[in-house]
Image (cartoon, rainbow, N blue to C red; front, side, top):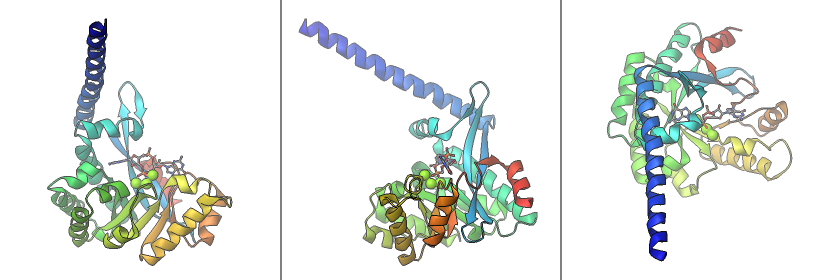
Length: 276
Ligand code: C2E
Ligand code: MG
Ligand code: MG
Ligand code: MG
């Protein structure tokens, strides 16, 4: 019996493993096909000045309009894209498209507009990432000081010394560096001090309940103070209510992003919004 059981278990694991791999294999192929067929779109979410409420920039967020499944949110395909190694190509596509779009807006009378783009860990670790960024900047002819690369705390912390060198090289291209989803990783103050970051983005999970007087409010306050001490600017993600906006305004947060201002939208809708 014992032997049979073991045999069965073995078969069971092999099957689930194969199924898992199979699912990834199928989705991976779909993602490659989607890239070729330009099924990915870039949506834009406004980043607003907290004091004036005016948009100062946009974050580019990828969307997949699947021919049968419709809109697939990034949470459902980015980890597979990472696992099968297509995430860096998706990032490159989003980078190129969004740089062109924002340069277009800038030429059309919104010369103050900034762009933030997300960089996955794989993209960040690509040996030629510098060249990819330099090429895309050159092609779009955008002023690089209006471009911010958003890199998560976790990506930066995987190999801090390697990351610091790479970030410094990127900064020589003229771009800004933001630390994304800040507060969800485990960076020490020492590490933060070493990293050449310009902007700190407070993760949505802290902002969510910050309009009360609970510990999230003091977390937000602490992170804003930390950013000030590090000479960084601060963006709060996930601002949904006027109460939250008032709270972060009183705490001297520089910028806010969230559904209160807009949901991520296609370029055309943002154009309308910008000319309002
Ligand atoms: P993120 O970079 O932290 O982007 C912010 C996410 O929060 C976006 O989700 C945005 O839609 C959502 N959000 C913004 N304001 C609010 C709000 O007020 N309430 C709520 N509930 N949500 C809000 P999205 O677009 O689904 O993207 C999720 C994550 O996927 C992003 O988090 C980013 O890590 C990743 N991502 C998106 N586009 C790209 C991309 O082109 N490349 C890479 N590597 N990652 C991307
Ligand atoms: Mg981001
Ligand atoms: Mg974020
Ligand atoms: Mg986030």
